[in-house]
Length: 195
Image (cartoon, one colour):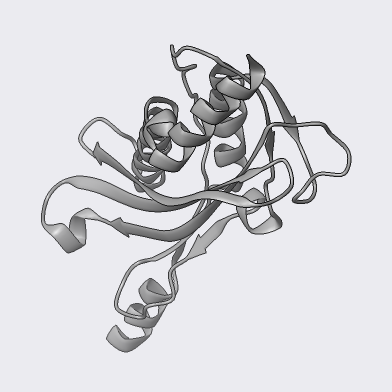
């Protein structure tokens, strides 16, 4: 009886499609046209825990990531267009952004002995010029933490932790984009060329 119960409990999977609201950043808009390329892996990003030693989670964050980037980027740039390839044949742009998720990790209260859900996400940001030449390539880490005390379920707690991590990436991108040395150099050169 006990082995059958353990097998049943071990087979439970927590499934989550992340949903949340994302604020618009209050930043100075850059006077450039940005193309953004979301590949299929980014659009439909789903993390599935494979370890037999952990609770099973299937976390789909792709739609929420798209929602975040579609909220943040138009606040950062004068114009934003989505493109299907790099370089884009269908649009006249100044820069191209291609975000990707390189790593997704989580911790649950059972593992940490603390009553919080935590999420770490590493985004790889690549920026290309209009001809498809790589200008900058950097990693942006994001972190989200949520106490479980006020939430009704572990799915709700995990969702909130992922949303907090996505908000973190939105803030880091909007506040740090022009601080990336290669982008800052490109912006200075672009500004001189426009004079």
